[in-house]
Length: 314
Picture 1: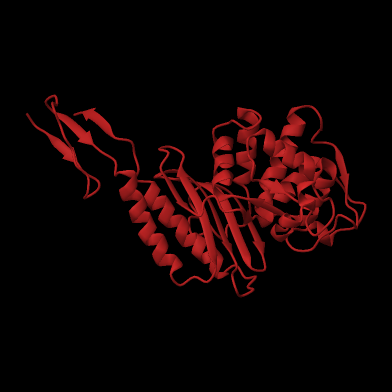
Picture 2: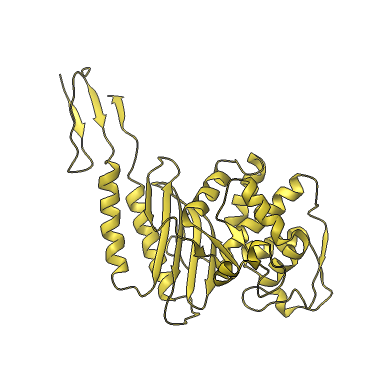
């Protein structure tokens, strides 16, 4: 009898009652050992970072997770645009809107910050699909307001609620106006544009990846749109040859990033929020961006090793 035992973690124990000749036993590290390993590395990164970090990550292939303040209600900034995208795609799929529907650029919709429409002339006519693409690819704030004027913020929240997301909420248009019912709650004013928890955002990504939002075909189309986001300043920043579906957000004292990294170690979905950052830094080398980049590598490495236990013949 020839017995081969692979032990990926030093704390693993194996009790074998009987094995066939020539079989190989491969065991994954226990959840506790994976968590401890990732936790020590994350803690080392956070030791010198000034700000509050909340995150959740899941290997979509194995189910392995890591959480740090995963159920914190955090400011979303532009990552809430994922929820707006979902409502737009759902509305079209239901036949209640058409991608060819015209939206008109107005002074009321115009808002500074990310995007290009703020530089263009009033009266410009774009399709609903054009505006959704601009919202997701370059995080265009004016395009977002045009889409929200068409859909309404309450409709976005109703959609999230119908999908089982109780914490993902948009409160108004970018800048001001178009307040949702929940946006009028004084306790929600502190969140600005929107609120979510890292855990729910990752669950939304997972449902998209599994084809469970609207339909398999529509979910795939949304994932493909997110794969074309043009700015990768945070998670996956250094992984230029690795596919990813992402959305980032930024405020003076906040950086947020959500996405799925399609690494060789597995499909790792993550949502990271860095708030209460003391210094205002609008460069691509904002310390929160750099931190999220390093954290994403830790999460890919740590969770990517969590393969299910397997017994294979050899």
